[in-house]
Image 1 (cartoon, rainbow, N blue to C red):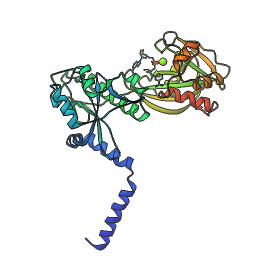
Image 2: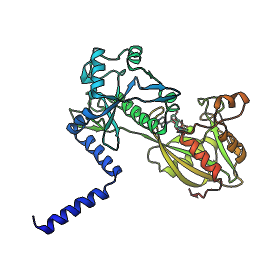
Image 3: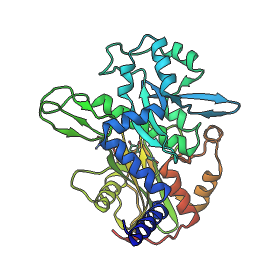
Image 4: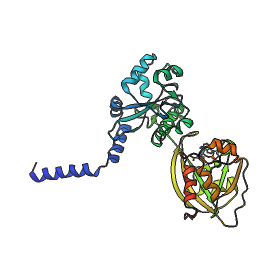
Length: 350
Ligand SMILES: NC(=O)c1ccc[n+]([C@@H]2O[C@H](COP(=O)([O-])OP(=O)(O)OC[C@H]3O[C@@H](n4cnc5c(N)ncnc54)[C@H](O)[C@@H]3O)[C@@H](O)[C@H]2O)c1
Ligand SMILES: [Mg+2]
């Protein structure tokens, strides 16, 4: 190697090191674990496991706060041995992320029937005692956790649910096999690959310039109103889905719309919520509620919505007979908050 080449190479590695941010190296590490089963298996040795039981995550309470505990591979093996389970069950775990120091994070459900373990559901109460925590329904758990853990557990549950419901090939009827990371399943007989899926859903906050339109379904908790939401039909663009959903649900025509943000939503199955602001033509604001979809819908003034946002306890609101809005975690809340802060935010023609 010439002196020049030595300098050039050193400079190159210096710049590579400088240019690859923590985020980039982390993303590439996760990509490698999804592609390479051996690398993923190796990552389990030093990784950490979040535990679920029948899709309910394990939480522990310390003082007034809940947290999602992580377990090492060794702790998990000891736990399975204690409950007479085959450690092969660990192969059902799915990769859900990693720390900046590349500690890989996995999720494993100890309650679902397993394809790699003949012995199915473990005893929940006994497990909870042993783990000094409780398996909490995800909807409740999300409100007890910080945003980072809530998002991680949502991803974990969505992936565990998808694997649980995609164990057979829809063409051959044969059992499919997951890769180590759980980023896909393959049918051994015809090699069809199945990838985890999310259904795109548009959620739209309609405004007439001064008021915003909120609606409720009969399945919503009592008193809660939200923005209009609906699944995208096959072949539709985001814009077409917004126009159709608003027309279908409240009988109005969207004139302009503006994309705001998106969010993965695990209920009832995985959805990609795509949030937009929309305006309707002035003078064409008479709502015709589609009662097959909604229980009620109405226009709310800026003051009414701003006051509802400031109230934060749905239970006291119900007692007062006032309406309340989705919790902070939901993208609907962000959309409504955005409108309250900037009611005249510019929108594009639909
Ligand atoms: N994160 C949030 O802030 C937030 C707020 C509101 C709604 N949401 C979610 O948005 C989703 C869609 O809202 P919606 O219920 O008003 O939708 P919607 O208006 O499309 O009505 C639901 C109906 O659409 C049909 N449908 C079409 N494709 C479907 C699919 N892929 N999965 C299930 N049903 C399908 C079914 O007949 C179903 O009854 C809900 O699941 C809800 O959880 C999230
Ligand atoms: Mg709807």
